[in-house]
Image (cartoon, rainbow over all chains, first blue to last red; front, top):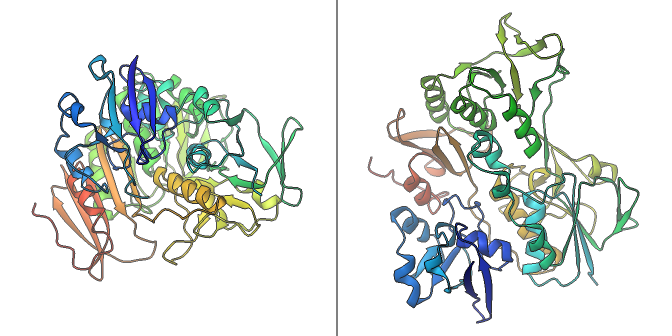
Length: 108
Length: 393
């Protein structure tokens, strides 16, 4: 099990048990986390599963590769901590990962 | 007061509508009724990774049954809705139960168009819409088998590419003179045609099917030209037909789908329609449009959920589509309405990676990017713009 914490824009916090090999997006979807739309189903062709990685986790999660960077340009509120949650595969090293759900996604 | 919402149809649109209602803080009862036994799942992989066996069935489901239970969404699966009674505000199920509602969202989807031709009842003639359809087709796809695909649209081409990967000998039969004639530029359609032919798939254009022959199982597809295509398996991929029977019987206006406004409202108060089954007015005031796409299903579902609850609606977005063949991605942003003539310009190599930019009177209407995600991504911000410059090749 890999524990993940989602913080909403209003600061409410939801902790979810994910499993190794699942993506962060799939984990959020399963838990019904609001604000992560994943409109394309994880194909890395939209940017509606955008999240902000907590500063202390950025290094472990890593930065977005070039194509993901381009998709992130479409995401409102994009900054250096931005990633697409469908591109983050949970590993034991990510146990405790904390991310913030943005105020809005690109179609909302 | 709104206390209960019933959603008829548990595909992507129905599942999204249910979850969106909860995420929008609706606290009343939500019932999601589906004909198939499975919890809602993604259909796009059925002709791609699921058909080739690369994606397992469990990976197709958006969420587990537990997730719906936690969200307090009641799943009523393996049940068909027989009638919708707008006056009594209830739907009647095939087991005789009635489910009442304050608001109803129809997400009945689309069915595969069947061919009413001699021999259509023979065994091994398939359509591809459900997990079960895909499993049946896959069982027959052994190396060396002969598959005839009727219809050169996205579904047919994706299935053809997947079958080829499994070692089948594949013939695609298209009645019109080119592939994808309703959904892509001639340049992209021709490029995909050449790609399929290079990959060993036979493509027959301008050939109408007049029937099937065989004893118990199909043995060949008979063409109007007199030619016969030998086949052990046939996939009919001749488009989708909106499932409107329930709505029509309930007195809801339908024409190529259930007619709705841009928020999904039908002509009967409190009844909405979303996804493949809906022929919706555009936000921009353009003509009604029925789109069979994931993005359309998800956006309409979220919009209707917001409308049901009287909340602000999400802003509209450029429509996009994607297809995958031979592991390569075709991504399309924007849409060219039927009958609109365009000036199409190519960037890249039509026999490699390319993008087709489609303009009408200098306005960029659509970009088709084949293995060029950069063009697709950038296009999303440029569709509708005047004098959009082509990127450097």
